Length: 211
Image 1 (tube, one colour):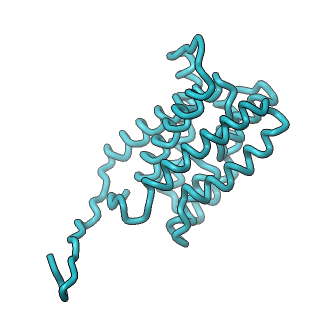
Image 2: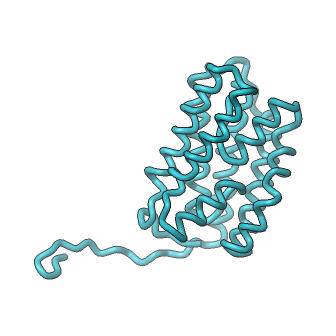
């Protein structure tokens, strides 16, 4: 319609997600992220955020990703509770626990005899980006930097994808001492894929569903 000679587009009111919708989103998002993590682990690549830190520690120490990922996220639950509330913190705890579980099980469900590193960087990064997008749209994170990124976007309007990209590049810089140069370059490509998916699709006002 037109108001004062200017075209205006009617915006539908936000629709609250139902409980089962949140549950299906968390299940779907964590399954997709877990597959991306397994692909990265097979190709010895690194992503950002706490998942990247967990992969880095896995490569450096030989500890399982599922265990390290659970442990490194523990301190960030305090921020989740204080800044984003108990419902968000509980959903995030559930999502982190499911990614830890699914990443361990997916390695048993799916076996890769060979995977091209370039393909792994793009497809694995795409899977993680899409999984995070599903979780973000249901106000669920995967701990760590995801919690801080969502808080900064909601509080100050800072794009979650751009903020996380900066942090991820810092984590990848630390991997210089662990990964071969070629794997490090491909990891940077994958980090860009993940965060561009979020930056393009997770804009304030683009998705109006609420949890």
